[in-house]
Image (cartoon, rainbow over all chains, first blue to last red; front, top):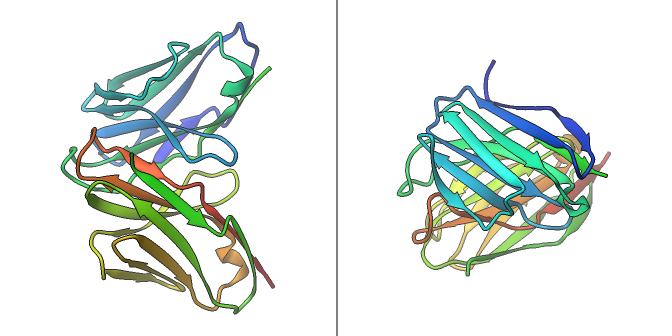
Length: 115
Length: 112
């Protein structure tokens, strides 16, 4: 399998539930990202991992908890979410370090609905 | 703060009717400007990277150009399969690791 794979594609959860999103990249990249995409808004960067080390956390609420066990896998653990957290959550990967400008490669996202 | 503004928000073209999408940006030292295509229900797909003013890149019916303040995505003789949302993004030289600022996109519809 190639590219960036995200599971599940759709998720409906109540505000008291705990769930996890999974991302796997088969591109050999060293950096992985979580983005949030809401209607009429630009993509919002949430977290960045480089070689398993978290390098960016864009003031994301603690109800979102990332985990990167290795350079190929990324998780986003969700708990006690709010309805305004409903969005498309995109995982991406890229090659290089902060001095390079290699493009992002995205998965097809998880459509999250919080009820 | 880096900013990206895309216009128009939506564009409807007849098949074969050429047009351009605009991406205006402000950034403290441009490292790269990116164009992506996003189909409904899918993640963005990388199209081009532009690095400096005057640069141009082409792919099939698409041509991207860059000035110091804006980028254009020219679509020549579009086909219905070119219908998608086109996203522009910039990466600054300074700032955090791989921080890329996105615009809100232009939704293109090409009618047969």
